[in-house]
Image (cartoon, rainbow, N blue to C red; front, side, top):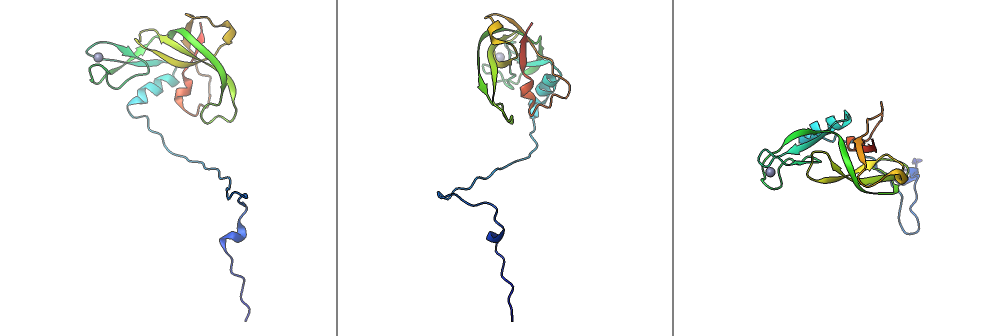
Length: 160
Ligand SMILES: [Zn+2]
């Protein structure tokens, strides 16, 4: 009586480990990322508007928004900023943004947003040789179908 060869999982293995016992494995995860209380902030950003947080006690405005005032530990309210800011300093270097395939030279700058008490790091879309300290910047309008992997990547400023 003939027996069919018993198949094992290793019969169909396309990968082989190297001499060190390592095997390249690519993982891809797909999940739904909820923005929670920051949903208005990201929605506004995708519409070209900047929302910060305002403390109802001290009236201080911060960007990005904080859910609670760091001084009074009380819930803040969202408040719209002008979308303008002043460039404090900047740097340019090769960056691979999250979910991007390629590394490209990008400029990031420390910006004092109009109406906020703090400065924040944002991406700057400009020829860095044309930038000067104190330059007036404005939030850049998104192009149609920009296909950003995350709305925070819409936080790009350009010189006015
Ligand atoms: Zn406060």
